[in-house]
Amino acid sequence: MNDRGLKVLEQYELETVSVRRGRGSYICETDKGLKLLCDFRGSEKKMEFQNRILYRLREAGYGTVDTALENKEGKLVSLDRDENRYVVKDWFSGRECSSFGRREILEAVENLARLHCLMVFPEEEKTYCGRPLKQELEGRTRELKKIRSFIRGREPKHPFEQMFLDSFPAFYSQAREAAALAEEPGGEAELARQIETGCVCHGDYTYHHVLFLEEGIATTNFGRCRFDYQVNDLYQFMRKILEKQDWDPGLGEQMLFTYEEIRPLPEAERRILYVRMAFPEKFWKLANHYYGGSKAWIPGLYLQKLKTLNGQEKQRHLFLKLLE
Image (cartoon, rainbow, N blue to C red):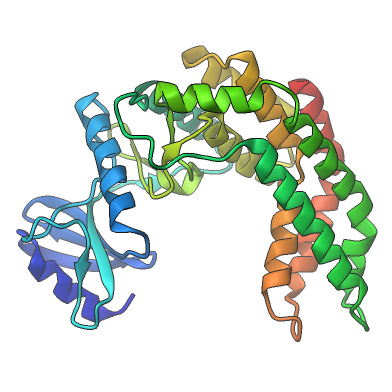
């Protein structure tokens, strides 16, 4: 984001006191509190949907969310003279949730469970909905097979490519088993039930998007919110934390227990959590990053990540046994 974007602030009923750079954004002190100016690449209709969800959360008593502001023309998305698109959102002075501090991790899980209890809007039009888990995992399994075929045909092979081929049979087997489990009765019916009930998930609930304030917690970056299995949020948060904590089974149990103290998981959602955890998502993501990147220079980080992934497999399977 370049400095020219700051001119966009003139399109809002705000008096800017000071501006500092954030992560791909500008954090602005204004007469109406802290705001965030950032690029916007989505659809305006989706932003309108997102903002309706956030206003409903505020009405329900959860006010610390990054609602977008309307500009002087009543629009949520503003253009600069080069027609670059921006949004201005409410923002908060706080720090990101630690990925290693157990107390903060469990507070973030508790925060998610409370959000899920509030994010139920049956009267909202079901425009943005998730897809069945079966479709998602079958598609990812096919992608893995395609990438394996591509690497097989490359000579000479980079050390990452050779390790990928050596690791492939075990991870591909896990992917196929998870996709097969997703076919079992109940998954699609549970998705239909949650959509009909109006259950909304955050869509990108990670420790980066949970801010600890002087008083309370703020939740940000709802750009991927949709009607979907709410347990997807719990899965994503748990997986990212557990990857950093070497799949500590005790921490995993604590996170699940903390969530269920507030929002008990029905059997169908518990099954979805298990199937998602059983699918080797990190391996699939690494394969996709490799496949979409330059083959002339393969970052050494890919090889290191794959080594770490292989080294964590024993602990990951110990954790999976707790979910069975």
